Length: 92
Length: 92
Image (tube, rainbow over all chains, first blue to last red; front, side, top):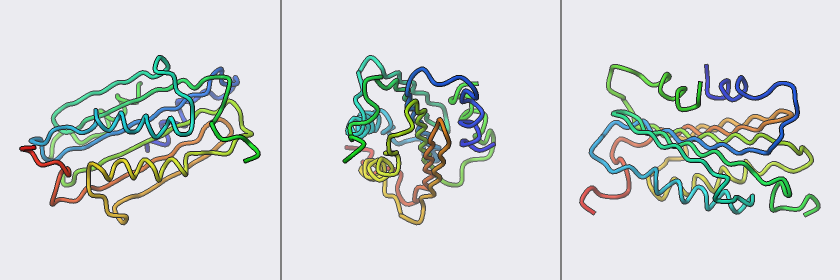
């Protein structure tokens, strides 16, 4: 199963979505373990990029960071506000 | 199953990893479909951020973008070069 299959299988099939959501996952498979992780810093920069496109309240972000011997994963779940879809107007 | 479970279950359990890999997924569940997608543009900016931390060859990136009625997914798979793990030296 590819990751895209995961997204396909986990989404709701019928009822319309109540909220717009943006989910970002970063997985780093590490060969060398003597290096500091850069994912926590990366997380801030990714959010800065996202904010160029959509308004994101700090409260609307949930973050999950996990680390084990071979892999680090960073998961950001963002609920987007109802009052806008993007910062870019349709007719631009 | 959460997305983090997916990452956990899909990684190799035994043999050491041959390559360092970075995988980035962005899923946008859309409520309103009359808006242009910003994921292709976002992709470029995400790669710019990643390149601050690791050297990434253009050839080492595979991109998968899918779109259906309710969801867009962007998947970036990056094989990191062997000769460095990050741009930041250990003793910095």
